[in-house]
Length: 294
Image (cartoon, rainbow, N blue to C red):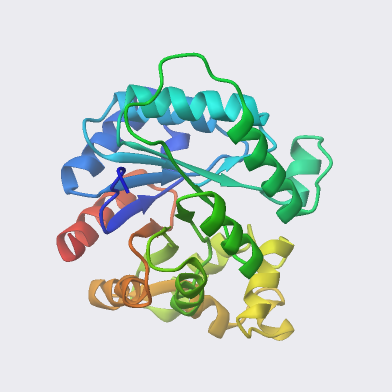
């Protein structure tokens, strides 16, 4: 891999809530802490590729990665152009994470028809690869990965991209994903964390975050069923077992152990998502985690 995000990165949507200049300053602070990458989503906030350009401009060496850029947000030629532009302007510092998003978001927010995910993604990658691009080319091979959960999407990630970025991942899923991907591709699972030792408070924070995704988004729910979680686990407000399996909570040592479990299961890089919307608290927690992990 010519683009090296290091062993541990930050996954956050909180920078989206800050004015652009403040987001750049916060990204620079995360870079100074030693994090290897910043991953960020694209839902109903900033455009993913424009956001990447803003944060790349405000930092010096940290990798910026879309987690993920929605393939329904732009056609394949536009995605190829944005990917190449950022990869040429910031060599070795941009990872294009691509995903099919979810039916409620694609149809409800964007007004598009949601198509079968695997078929749609395969066709989109083929169109990207065939797209014309006559501007200055990247000096290093640009890097893309897929938001892949199920075995067939992981196989597509292995065959047509440089790796996979699973979300709502458990270490058990990471082990399965590594087996499918093989040794070489990037495997960068996301891990939610809450630095809180009180079980009730920690699980409440976790449930608030998970309610965005479960049980309402089938792609995530189906993946958790494949991992052995029951309908009872997936019924709101979600079982303690499911919450504890997805969200690492406790003291720093406990949280770090869960992050490390992904590495032990085969991840090259773990994307750590500190839950909560208070930016000052978030930055304090990332500083604590950096001191323990990096």
